[in-house]
Length: 245
Image (cartoon, rainbow, N blue to C red):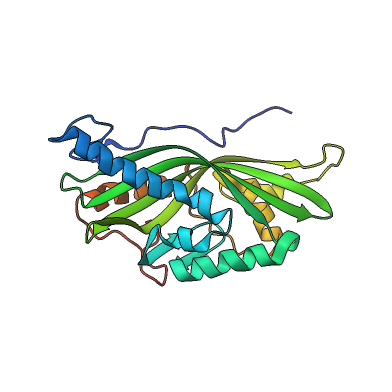
């Protein structure tokens, strides 16, 4: 088969989305040790997503968020309480739905100079187990998690979460089985998560299609990251309005 299209190009974000005064990686600041400690606290919170959610440690998972937090994923968007209940329901449905696990990788944290707002960008591979047409199948999706955090009364917490998908793949768990995936069906979905979106639709999910790392939503989200650190109100409403655009 001849490859004629690059579905997952890597392109530098616009320079206008770079927050010039953000504190990151000990690159500059006035109290480097204090600032590094704050970034460590934030990273520890972000890493709880996979550790807690995948193990159904719901009390620990909720400790990451403030009560008004909003979550946006490919399969569910809503306030944290709604997302939590949907996650519990997904586990309860078992193999008829999908089983989601996370491999949490590196995390880069930026804060404002006052150490009251922060953003965490984490590299993650989401592994989702499906049963499609009688074939047990895994989808691996490489993505970037975006955590928007705020410090309230001396404590950091997540107030908004979303992600962008870089690329994915679909493989049968048993290599002796073959699952035929029509190319024309795959091409209906965003390039960064076309196999995941196809599989999610197969199990009844109304898939959100504006989370592609290779679409215009990437630059819109990066601009929101900068705006958040600069004190702007860039979060979605509880009805999902304002999206990532």
